[in-house]
Image 1: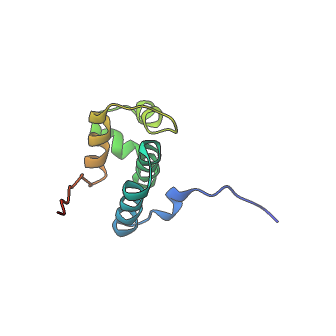
Image 2: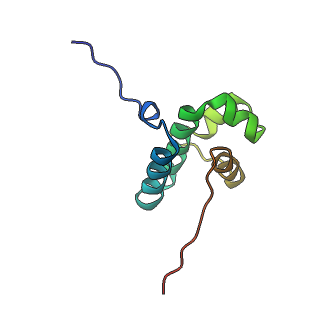
Length: 93
């Protein structure tokens, strides 16, 4: 029996799946979870493509989106926009 390591990026194969994944992480995860999830999405889309859209190098992206990284908020926004996402606020009173 051959065991392979699970890689969530392999399953983020369409926009709907990516959207659902990010929404769940934003609702339930902490800041580290969100950073790592963005890394998963970037890998699923293609790190070279994300690097091109953000103006960052691939190594910088890998570093910024790794576990326990502390990227600047501007970097997070660039990556969100590059993957076709944005942050929205819903206010309920």
